[in-house]
Amino acid sequence: MDIATILIINSLISTCSIRETARQEGRAPSTVSAALERMETALAVPLMRREGAVLSLTLEAQKRRRLFNEAAQLGRQLQSIGGVTNNRAAISLTALIRFSVAAQAGSIRAAAKSLGMGQPQLTRQLSELERNLGCALFERNRSGVSCTEAGKRMLTLVETIISNWEELSHASSDRFRYNLATCRVGSVMPLGHESNIAQILANLTAGWEKLYPRQPLTISANTAEELVSGLKSRRYDAILIDHDDFSKDFDGCVVSDTPLALIGDHRVMAELQDDMAAFLQKHRLALPSAKSGIRQHAMLYLESVLGPVGPSKLRLIEMDSIPVIINLVTRHGYLSILPEPVVARLPFPITQYPLGQEHRQILSFVWRRNTFTPTMLNEMVSLLTEDN
Image 1 (cartoon, rainbow, N blue to C red):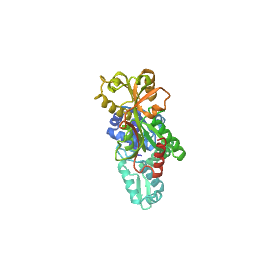
Image 2: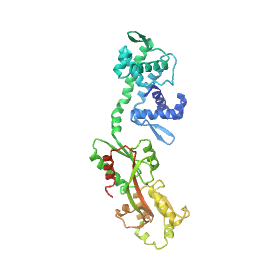
Image 3: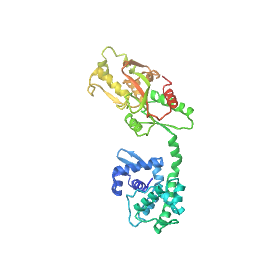
Image 4: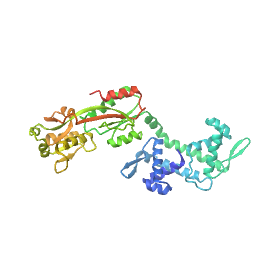
């Protein structure tokens, strides 16, 4: 962590705007975004909640607002200790701690030995600190070093800054250790408690807790696009997606492969004779939204029957909830396309029309290479496929 990042984040907490903070601090917006990412990583907590282009403070940021403001005031005093403020100086907390050790030891050689580093390396770092601040911090003599007047003021400031940072980050230490041990899995959104995805994730959660009771597992839902992005950025250790077309940069395997069927109330489906196109155009259709793998396969089937599908050919509504879709089917005469096993478990008089082997719901478990041991990976895949 460094002083410049603390100053940027304090400004961002005040403005809740990347661009306004960049203007106030004389930085590029990308620099502000990078500072936010560094601080959130260091504290192991999110500070900003993103809602489109709008930022708002999380509860964790609100709790730390006073400490950030105090840290920023101390940081600005430190930057101007040489008489001229250097806002762009790269002054790390590590460098400040090493200055403090050297000042208290009265010897750069003894300080280097205490810190477990080479004397030339420590000397260079302290000289760079003096250049950044624009003043001498030490008077050097044959017996060692002693603080200049600026160095004495600096030592008092540094001790307060380090104390402030420890208070700022202390609440995050347990959370940071928790995050390091946590296995993070992302998944496409289950459409309902009857869905294959819901059952697979429940199997994984229950089995993982028995196998690794001291290693937490977190599962969060997102779109397939965001899941792949999160896997690349290491936000997730593994993801469950509803297709098998994943990047060759990752490893993965299919954990579920179930046939899809056109479904409807038995009285509605009794109307189906030989003309499937006329039947589909006569009745309203409820399908999951376009981000769903089910929807993508459903559209392939519908286009194979009807040709290019548009509002003039098909009365279609989107609904990412199996319970709502089933209500539309059983109570309002809608048709839908869903995995056969989901429908077979339902206690309703629903008739299924299989779409054929080429139209299926595929679920793939995808992970970053070298994330899991072979044993752990085999256990996870076994849990994900235990109902197959």
